[in-house]
Amino acid sequence: MSDATGETVNSVARACLVQFRSITAIEHAWTLVRTQRQMERVLDGVRRNPGPVLYTVVNQELRRQLADCCRQIGVAGISVLDPVMAALASEFQEESSNRPGLQHEMDAEYFDRIEAMHYTMAHDDGQLTDDLSEADVVLVGVSRTSKTPTCIYLANRGVKAANVPLVPGVPAPEGLLRATRPLVVGLTKDPARLVQIRQNRMRQMTDGEQDSDYTDLEAVKREIAEARRLYAKQGWMVIDVTRRSIEETAAAVLTMLKDRRQEGAS
Image (cartoon, rainbow, N blue to C red; front, side, top):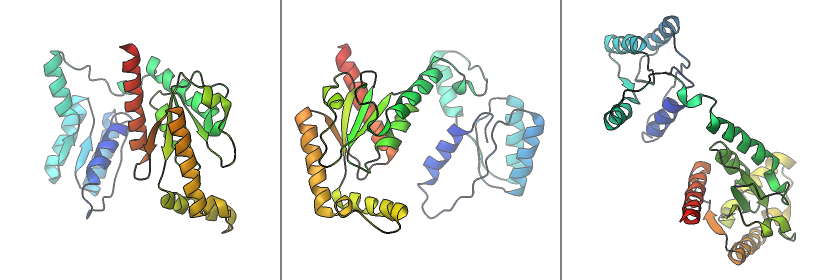
């Protein structure tokens, strides 16, 4: 339950629940809870579906109501931000403002994210490769190495991310090879796993008919090897995404970008 969008508490809940593999959790979500009337609906829901309650609420009266309800029905009520907020208040010697949704205010950072998203969508899948000078990151890789979703995730973090596919028999775009400002990262994947993903994709799109080279293991091995030779020749950083989620790949890219910027500043 949250007095804002619920993104924070949802992320915390999911990060914790995955550690309990024998448990199948049923989630009940209430967001933008900021009035007494809205809180009454939440309390009715908790009484009908008792279970641990994770919440982010700054209004003290609403917090008291929720805590009282949890005690009465014997379930855990957990304010997920309290330990962090208490530690920061002690460190800074300052009380928090207790205003809900501050992280979603339309400040400069918000508009940076919007601009990054526009840039990323305009430079998706090899579009506008002659115009990569404004990119922060360019992801390069063969088909089905999660370039687009990783770029979208990065854009949500305010990073202008373009991506360029490598197509067998087609030279890499000159605009990519000339790019010096952005961090260029080559993505690679285990060929056998890549074949599985491509086969599934082709079945969804073509009713079972498949391009032999696109899904042939030996052809895919050559495709991956050629891509890696290009990465080495250009001196690009490389990430093997075989066992990485999109979030993990993006985190690795952000670390590389941070290190690059620090080196440039020193």
